[in-house]
Length: 283
Image (cartoon, rainbow, N blue to C red; front, side, top):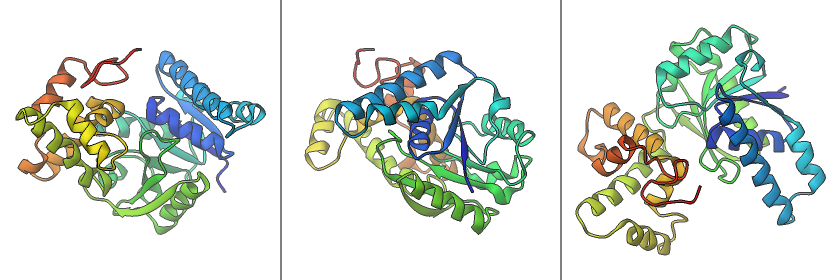
């Protein structure tokens, strides 16, 4: 039975997952090595719950109960839980280093779930000192407290029992889980990659500007245009996923990263989190 969930990484995604976990009644631990990141996450969650109260979706009393279920910590030793959800930077060596550290302090039956957007769950499991049958992918979408879909990814050695537990956990969180085999980009990011890349190619060729492309696609039924969505996700994260698929598919031209995004990442124009990306934002 799952009672405690530890989320590692207090960025926008990690904070969103922590809010979902606590809102679903789980004792929740949100870990990040950066204290400012934890404070930002606390503010993000508090603000989000406050909006829910204002709109009548949540009582003030329930909001306080949810916040009380979350422990914010910069000490990895506090990350002892039934399920660990890793939501840190998209770099295999960083993820494996953290999971190996946490494997030493957690039980043998603890499940390790990665929120990776595109890295191989099989490769990650092979690199950590836990039974690979206990490692799976649990890919949420941004913003995690709003988006319903969760991809439950089974690596080569992920046991059916582990996949079932992660799937049921997603249901308990009010999500719509879908089972996926380990493959570059899984389902959504592999298909959605061209939503971003083709939009950037249109802009590169001067066919239309960012705002026009966004407006046209939103008028066609998409909730957010590609440029606004990349700014929300973070251009660094979005580019990392594109680069991962480009490498996984042996530099297939259809996955080639755009110079528009590469230059923005180089210049630190990552989107909403830095105040400027394809658009400018008030901090």
